[in-house]
Length: 431
Ligand SMILES: Cc1cc2nc3c(=O)[nH]c(=O)nc-3n(C[C@H](O)[C@H](O)[C@H](O)COP(=O)(O)OP(=O)(O)OC[C@H]3O[C@@H](n4cnc5c(N)ncnc54)[C@H](O)[C@@H]3O)c2cc1C
Image 1 (cartoon, rainbow, N blue to C red):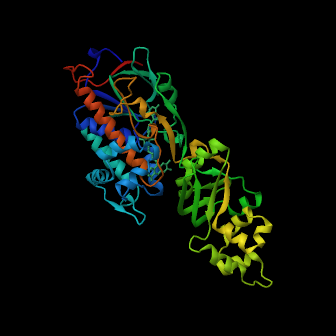
Image 2 (tube, protein in one colour):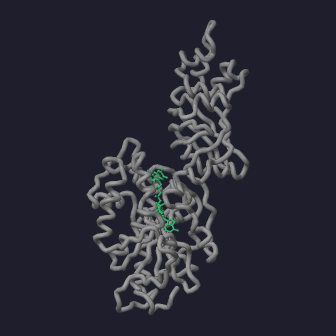
Image 3 (cartoon, rainbow, N blue to C red):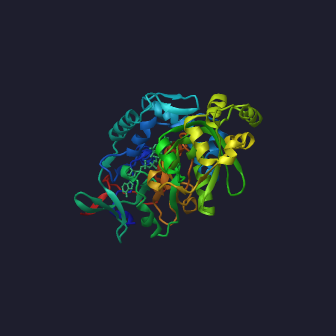
């Protein structure tokens, strides 16, 4: 970092204009800082807008205990952030932007209209009016030898002097929306521990037969229960739906299991989940129905007429059950209640909804400042936590952005840098 007397001590550079960076910028400007926000892309919030395509799931209305449990092994690190700015506070903040929210039947919380664009538009207007200055097409490339921030811009490389920085660079999925994960070596080179970015909320490869792939790719499978056990033997079951893809499976039910499945594949080379294709029917009743005389009818017809199992569900059974088991009512019934599906690889990070891995919490203080880089704060998906879909991702991104922004404010107020009389923004030193 530069000597304290060279730039305005109250100016903060926020790098990354996703939900975390924008939230950091907001609390900083409200706290009296001068805020310059830089983003590599021509506009901010691209992943937020993409999230709004399928219905922007902002947060969840379940109990605090259930909500916190979604953060798994990182609960202890995320809990204080959500205590300060949890689902209720987030909804209040969104209402303050003039956007109403509603709770869907599953408890998920959405903005009225489901889209992200009105929220982002209102938010950016408020940020601009408050004085946040936006610098698009500025890709952060690390620090100069003197400690200035380096940016690649359409005008060539530029470096910016500033003492206080909030990094909110996102994870590594959907790189075309801006979060490429290219920041990882920039921090590890400076001695910051970063857990490797991995796909989270992702699909998996199965290796379907050509026949099954051609016939059923794109078909939704609903409603089923998927069960798996993690490496410690802990069982997990959830009801929902998924989609058969050309390579394997994806969709909300698969995403919910994805962290366990991914870790099991890493440890053992593959992971088996069990599908209950008839969640509403007990095994005994299933076997009794399958055992009824079927005359000249095929077992496939019998499945359809007695149990309503047809289409992709019947296809899965034919794909995964041996001919002998298919012909035996007891063994077929057992397979319908617990159909083993072997998943062999996670889909690539770029296809995932989110990333696991990132800056280790152990490297940060309670204000989310990197201990090894005083004045540098981190927020959002670039931190080492993961959560299922359901609004938990955005909630923690908003909350950590707010915490990092408040942390940066406290840092400058506590004299992390001597206050200067001038009111200049960050100073461009070359380029
Ligand atoms: C298809 C899809 C649907 C989703 N739906 C939901 C949902 O409904 N609910 C939910 O909770 N979550 C959802 N998510 C996840 C959620 O959108 C992300 O977790 C969230 O956007 C992460 O916020 P962030 O601010 O940490 O990072 P991002 O939103 O990824 O923003 C990071 C920003 O940093 C910029 N940047 C990166 N590197 C640099 C650099 N070197 N220099 C300058 N700028 C840089 C990027 O351009 C980007 O603007 C979805 C994700 C996807 C892909």
